[in-house]
Image (cartoon, rainbow, N blue to C red; front, side, top):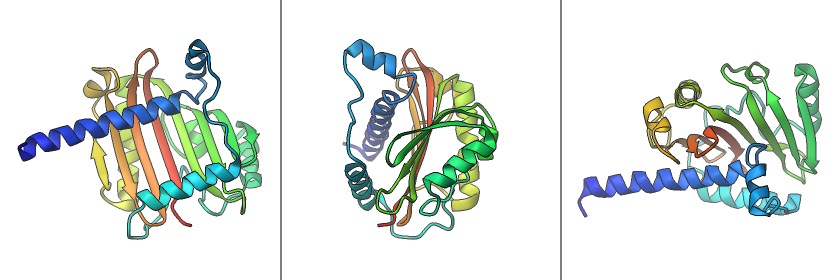
Length: 224
């Protein structure tokens, strides 16, 4: 197979895998729960905090890069430093509704972008994951649901541009961060990745049939 064809296949595969990953994530959001109900199942992930942390560490060791990040942006929150008490204090100050779903997982809903020092549409679901041994913040996922192609492309570009200022060029990109591409087909996905030895970030937008564009920001500590 020619090099150009290989590159095209690689990009397509990356986009499809990113889309499937986001679809799995969608099933854990408020928008996705009715979909699970129609399938006749509950949440497929019911693991202990220790098991979740072991999976995170395994993923971090597999995905991380070789150089330290110049900074570790995470929606204004400090990875490996903040605790559940700190997040609770932030939520009270910003008048944000949050619940501890289980030990090590706090979920906030309908978070105004200004509450995390950003602009654009509200964050429908904001999850904070804490290491059970230290109670330190190690994982953040933010979801914006039901966006138009134009809104998703604009918001993703704002976030990526800010990341470029702090960290330079992404480690990897796939898909197209344009409104036309994102809105034109089911599961059309744009993904931007950063990989450092102490920090991992994934930014993406996917066209989910029946739900509009789903944008996800994921920030994770890659420290042992």
